[in-house]
Length: 173
Ligand code: SF4
Image 1 (cartoon, rainbow, N blue to C red):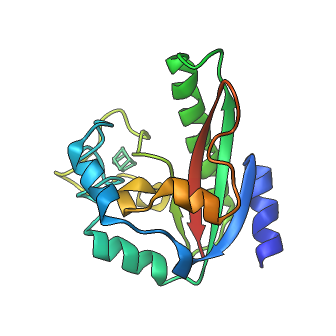
Image 2: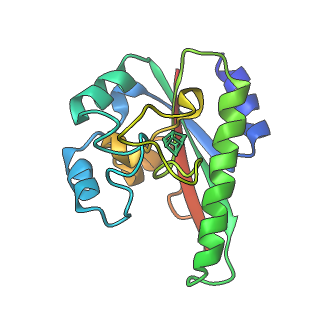
């Protein structure tokens, strides 16, 4: 099973990956409090972020209903550390990576992605249900997960090197 998943994440274009038991996922209510601060401007903007994803306890419970987690990353080249356009491009490419991975998998699974959802020009939140619930890959941070610690536990580098940006996702299965 794990070998098959490695093949799929590799084909989807991930740069690195590692497995952990879901029991080792570093949950932190502090991360949710940071979301509420809305520094990323994603809070309350889509079904992929709090409060639309449900309470901290509900998110945790959903992850823990699976036994295993595959943590993966995409590393993208930047011109320099102020290349915000490159960071945006990397973020979109990472979302495409998650789409390819999600499409290659059979349910049940839970796929969490870096930051909020950018699929639609205008999100239906909170007036109507998500237009693409089968392709809704909520925010890792929004689920109250400490991503730096998650990467460390899975044996991944949080920082991909000079002039790069790294994005992280997690597949619970
Ligand atoms: S897929 Fe569209 S409707 Fe659903 S959360 Fe993302 S932006 Fe909103």
